[in-house]
Image (cartoon, rainbow, N blue to C red; front, side):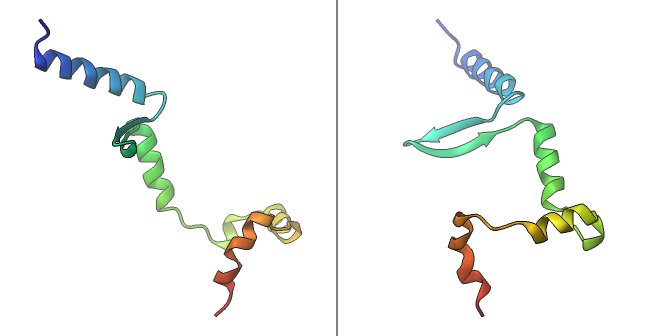
Length: 84
């Protein structure tokens, strides 16, 4: 007989061990409900969310690449955002 707390502890450890190398997605009724990720990845994502770049953060080569670049066809879906 498996003790319920042992089963829960084993499942929890398995999820945590897996989340170190890849996201663990918990589904309910075929819908993604919760994602478990490695703590270091979570901290990295939080830092990225707060990162603000100014023009001085870009090299001349970066600016030139943006000016030379052509938007992809998929970018046309956002053209409505350019009108006032």
